[in-house]
Length: 132
Figure 1 (cartoon, rainbow, N blue to C red):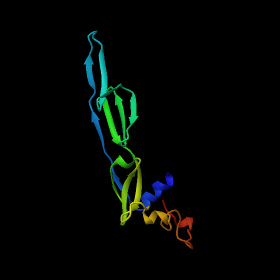
Figure 2: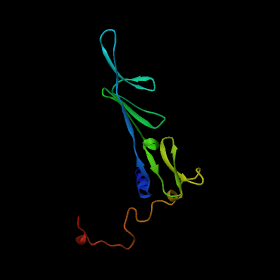
Figure 3: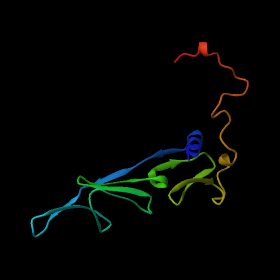
Figure 4: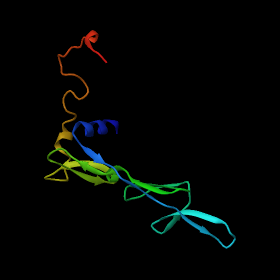
């Protein structure tokens, strides 16, 4: 997974995330007890609940309310290298060929770009000249 993240960064994939907060529902029962809960798609979730959905959302209910944010494919808007498209593969991000979405994006078949993790071959460093 770490290598995929580095490859994504190296290939110019960009993202913009999202999240939302809904206030809790507070009701008082006939005995005077206050009940606090979060209403998620007509399901009453108690504070300290955490769940993930098939719509690629992670949600948490607290006494302050419900916070949901996208994860994986639904983490935001993604950009892909030229000739590639971003698709949802069970909430994972998958880069596919823009002409044939049954094939992986060509740059990812070839591995990381040259010199992504090391200087070009034949390059030498004199540590005395390196300044931080």
